[in-house]
Amino acid sequence: MKIDFVSDIACPWCAIGLHALERALERIDGDIDVELHFQPFELNPDLAPEGEETVAHLAKKYGISPEQIAKNQAAIRERGAAVGFAFGPRNRVWNTFDAHRLLCWAETAGHQRELKHALLRAYHGEGRNPGAHEVLLELAAEVGLDVEAAREILAGDAYADEVRDRERFWQQAGISAVPSVIVDQRHLIQGGQPPEVFERALRQIAAESA
Image (tube, rainbow, N blue to C red; front, side, top):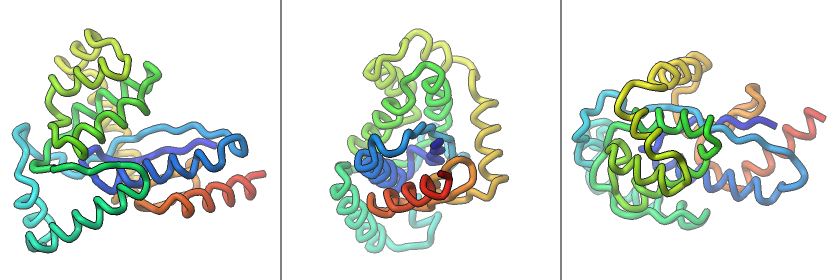
């Protein structure tokens, strides 16, 4: 079973969705063989490198009040804790394109999943900039990637076309919100669902495929 997890580092529900999916995969371990691949999606592709203050950004983008934002963030923290992810302060929103470039390369180097987790933790857990090259290089080293190769990638435009091509592919396939979990390129599970929803859906898809 191939699972494509379409998501953005900047998306808190993607952190929740990934951890919930992984809890489901732990429950079905041994019953279904799974390949997990991470696909790029940018919630804020036009953000400048310096980013924007989180509350101002969300208020402008979604037309909601600071009070509603605080309420939403509290609910997100609660949902994250339920699946083993700790949200910390996220005071700014940043551009994530270079992080997606590094994730594309990490897939070929065999450490994509580890880098994805490191990026989500750095941003949503620690409030760090996932577009800053010094942060990306530190995380690359942390997960066992070649730091000099990562530095060379970030200094140029390697994997830029691949990221854009992948984003375009999924958008043309109808993906307009994340996280989106696509199973065997045919079945869509949308949103940061609880683990039991992912487990039930994966077992059903596996049974139908058999």
